Amino acid sequence: MDDGATSATARSGALGLTVAVHGTSLRVTLTNHGDETLHAYFGVQSATGTHHDHLTVELAGEGETRLLRFTGARDDSPIGIVELASGAEIADELDLAAWATDPINGGTPLAPGPYALTATYRVQRPRAWSGSVSAGPVRLLVA
Image (cartoon, rainbow, N blue to C red; front, side):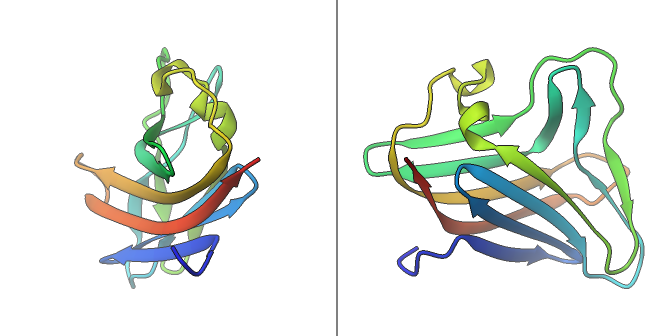
């Protein structure tokens, strides 16, 4: 992460994962780089916001490493499968500062300082793309 990059892209087969950091906001994009339509799990709307059950973010700081998850308890909700035509993408913005204080992430705010952020999209479920892809590390600076 020496170059201070704030965005990164990685691919696994036809699926691309791009992450871009702006302040403590993280933009996550899935892109279909294949020739055929691809089905992927993405955001699921809940009463408290959008959950990303298959996404984690590792934040490696000077004194600690934290793993953030973007899910939680919810009642009836769709399963979050999206259809991506060849070349299509879907994106969402995640507030890392807010998610850090969520009970699933320990409820503790992010400590100020620099972090190396690596996002991993991992799915081991039927009916959609299955596998793992990680993008990063990119620089996150918490003021």
